[in-house]
Length: 127
Image 1 (cartoon, rainbow, N blue to C red):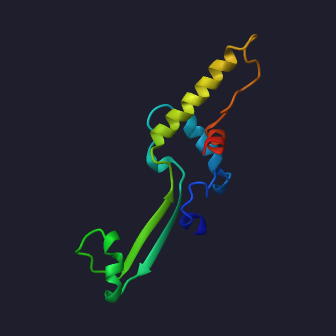
Image 2: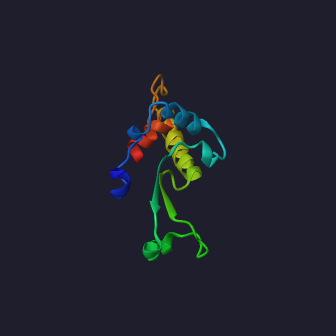
Image 3: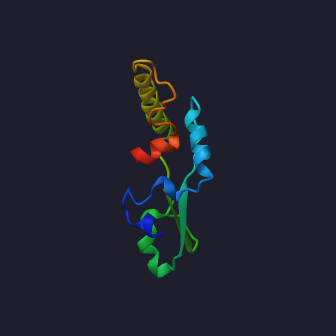
């Protein structure tokens, strides 16, 4: 919770995702075309607050409408890319640039695979 509330964009890193997610990220990075938002891993925090009539003025800015009549107010804070398509495009550009430069080496790239080898490697270094 402290990481979300710190407000720092550097509070999180790829290491905050379980190792189960890394191969999924790498698979997503190799796809071409649109990536559905629901498929991209995120970290989210839901907070619910009970609000009495006397405190209603404190939450009016986050209410969905003035017709709200309940006592619970929730907010979600989420670590996710602003634009998944742009993220994947930047990764593909960096990957393709690295591969082109490696292929242009005298004798070719051989077994050398330049950075970024995968989307997870790209996210580790560029985030």
